[in-house]
Amino acid sequence: EAQVTQNPRYLITVTGKKLTVTCSQNMNHEYMSWYRQDPGLGLRQIYYSMNVEVTDKGDVPEGYKVSRKEKRNFPLILESPSPNQTSLYFCASRAGQGNGYTFGSGTRLTVV
Amino acid sequence: GNSVTQMEGPVTLSEEAFLTINCTYTATGYPSLFWYVQYPGEGLQLLLKATKADDKGSNKGFEATYRKETTSFHLEKGSVQVSDSAVYFCALSEGTGGFKTIFGAGTRLFVKA
Image 1 (tube, rainbow over the protein chains, first blue to last red):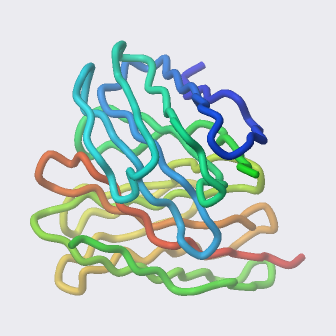
Image 2: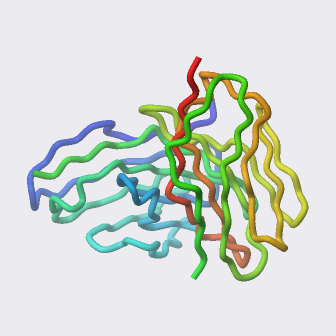
């Protein structure tokens, strides 16, 4: 089944403790992206990647890092999480321009 | 910069009513336009898309037409069902390279039996 898999689904952590949210897709898509969803703000793009080793900042990249060492994986790293990063995070992938995204099921992160 | 504006919700309809959710956009070049749907506790799912002016996207009884002259991409359905209750997002993918996808704030739809 074609899908984007994120882990974990739920995570509660403390301020400053480094964490990684994993994302993997099995569709051989070139484009991958991370979004955060907050009430009243819709989805905001954090980082995106056009291919292996090619990444760029979205609209809200502060406090986040990403890497794209393999085509299928695009982990999101929070080096020092803060409470304002409490949110619902989605990973997504798509084929070329003009194609829609396939989204993962989401990761609900709480930073206390 | 590019942006997407959707009508504010929630929208509450009775079953079999006609649905319209307005979406307008601001973009340079020729973006692709999308509607996504999000059911409770799930990720977004692509509902339909249109990649050039006057294209009509359609799926599961939903339709939207890419109107460049009015920079709009309104979502319509002739007869909604309770199972259509969800949040609907309009989005655009920037034309040049299409690397960034920008989403509207979402419109929640409630359909009553």
